[in-house]
Length: 155
Image (tube, rainbow, N blue to C red; front, top):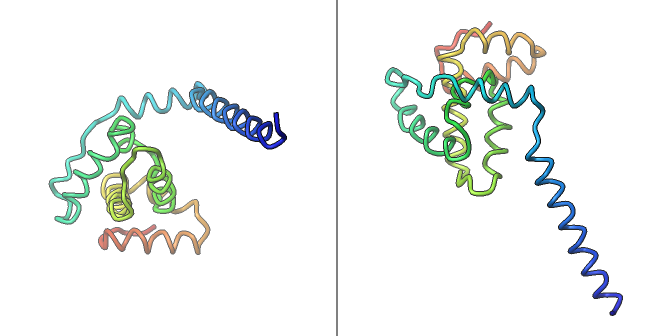
């Protein structure tokens, strides 16, 4: 067998080993994380978005469709994640998941919806999260929130 052929076989074997390790590692979660997700998934499964601004109505429908394709919709509704930076990172990560089907434009819509929703339904939790940020980060986060919810009263 040639050196080149042995190199290809070794590369394929190594790639397979990494893929298997990732699959096994991804299937295992720590018990505390499993319990946290179970609680989120068991919570309310809808949002009364009827009083949300008109531009948020179709965004809620997009949230229901896209996010429920990978996990229980209740997870996004009941999460304690409320800061714009957290939503930006999380939605970008979801966009790169296989079969998410979330386009760049849909990602932006989902981001605006989740930031608006956090400011409308979870203002106390949001203020607590903002208070934990350094002043420059807090100011930037408040600016992002006010871009989607001008009526939000910052701490």
